[in-house]
Amino acid sequence: MKRLFLMMLVAVLAMATVNAQTQARNGHRKGHLSPTQMIEKRIAMLDKELSLTPDQKTAIAAIYAEQAQQMKAEMEQMRANKDQQVQPKPEDMKARREAMKARQDEVDAKVAAQLTAEQKVKFEQIKANMGKRGPRHHKRGDGKAPEGKQDCCKDKMLQKDCCKDKPTVK
Image 1: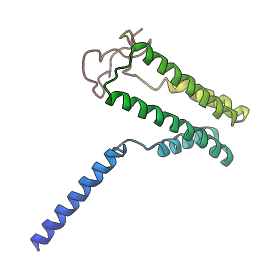
Image 2: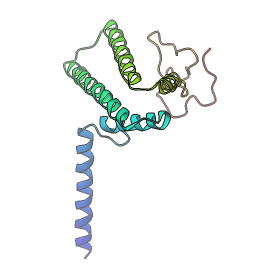
Image 3: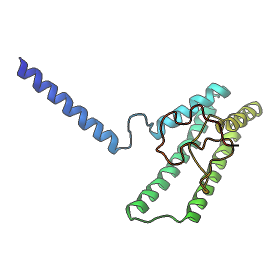
Image 4: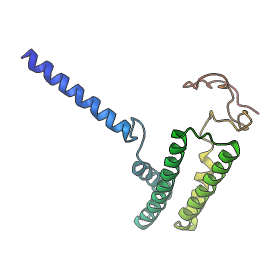
């Protein structure tokens, strides 16, 4: 009986390990959402805030799906460059950031085109508030934190709550 129990335990652990490796290989790590799940989450958030119609949900989901495909293609290109040990130049990185911002603005414009006038006002408020969600650990290219953001993690590994109870940069 003990042998049977041990064999079953080993089998279950082996299956769990294989499952975890398969998910990690497919980019679905614990806590990370698939592109489809991210789209569903965005649509749910917009529906909650804007009371979308079924037609609006479908149209906006298609817009976000197209964006996800474009991002996937760009990420694959970046991975290929990384595998080839190609280091991007700072000006290339800046151009890439500007292109990403332009694509996001284009997506936002397409989404706004699907909304009523009232919904557009709320949508703009949502976009404006997205950057005000709390301290960030990102810095500008010159190594300084953006105005109003935390700058306490300069020389240490990012740690949870490392900026707690510290003043913001003015």
